[in-house]
Structures are given as structure tokens and as C-alpha cells.
Image (cartoon, rainbow, N blue to C red; front, side, top):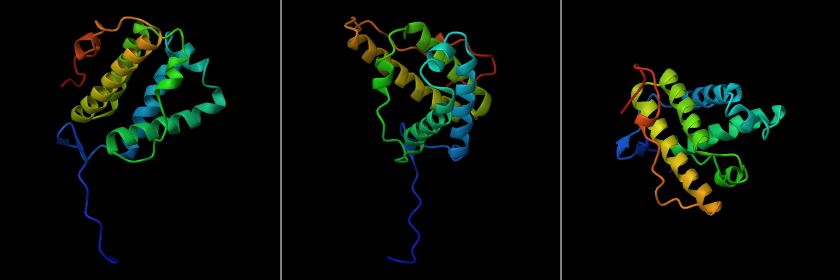
Length: 163
């Protein structure tokens, strides 16, 4: 019907309402802050910078903003498949995932309130584990003993957000 406002929708993540402070601007800050760290990192920078040309970074960052918007805000902006490009990177190892999560934790701890940082990091940890399993399977490795990387595995500052 015309003239009626659509009812406000509460996004529920893991059985809890999404914190109102989490919005597109915060997602943008996290994505850009995280990839700034990645691009400068001695372990991860070469992996990313060898695959993403300098003039393709704005498009990649927008795509990652779309991904996180869809993941956390339940928008429909991301329509891609994130796993296949990662399967094509032969040098990805456990240490890359640990460093990726470390930098992600540092970024969300610096930019987000504790509940939002934990929400971001929980999702990132699930994604990392899923990717680790898929990459191992793709390579024909035995992944039955592969445990998720947890909060305790990430060296974080004493004031960092923790669940």
C-alpha cells in the first residue's frame, strides 16, 4: 500500500540483534583499514599485491565492502563466490590465515566497539576455517584434524576486544 512505511527490520546474527552502531560507514572503515594493513604486511602484502593491480584496488575494496555488508547487515550487495580466487593461490598456508586473522583482529579492535569487533572477528574466523578446509581438500590434503584458529591463537593487545 502506498503511504505506509515499511516496518523496521531487526537483523539477527547468531541469535542476537545486530548492534545499531554497525553500519555501512563502519564496514567501510574496517575494510579499508584492514587492507591498508594487508598491503603493507611483509607476509601478506606480496600475496595480495601480486594478484591485485594497483588500479584494481578500489574495485576490490568496494567488493569487500559489499561482502561484509551482505554478511553482517544482510544486504544483497554481494553476489560473488569468494572461495575460487583463493583456491588459485598455491602459496597460501596456515601461517597466512593466522596472519590474516591477526591483522583483522587488530583492525576491528582499533575501529569498533567490543561487541561489533567480536561479531566481525567471529565471522572472519568462520570464513578462515571454511577456506582452510576447502583449500586443503582441493589440494588433496587430510583435513580431518584441522582445528579452527581461535581467539587464544591470536596475539592481541591487552585492551583488545574479546568475547
